[in-house]
Length: 156
Image 1 (cartoon, rainbow, N blue to C red):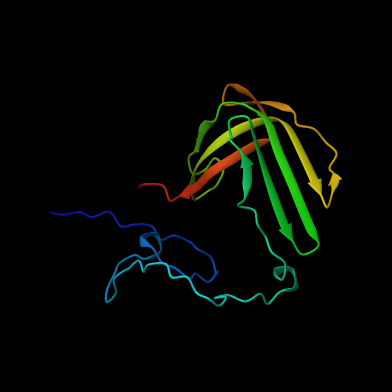
Image 2: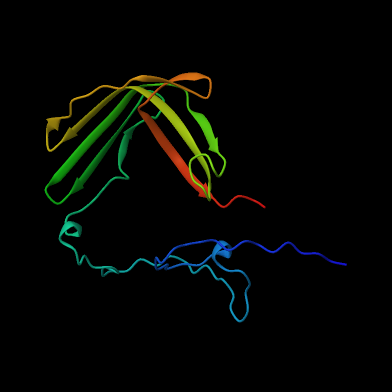
């Protein structure tokens, strides 16, 4: 007798989704998931319809080598943010099974502890400092870069 384990449904709430993947479908009948190649358009595909969308946001541009320091520059309407993380520790992989950080998802990310952080907003330096904390048997800074953060549905 072939017993198959029924997958539990993934609660995605009431949000609208542009894409589907196997985590969002219980079974496939009458359709095939196909990855279409990216295509550059000469015209915008999405137009801003909210006031706060009319500026530009460029958070993916960074400088530094992520071994010693890393800086990010972000611009939006009436807002310029510069962040620099320095005195970086060796990176380490953080894994949190479902139930620890999220009830439904496993978390995986590469953390880099920073002992010196400077933040400026519209040219004004933010006050504050970073503090040490005990984390998974290590003494790390509360200020960390979290790279490659991935949330995954746990295997059954």
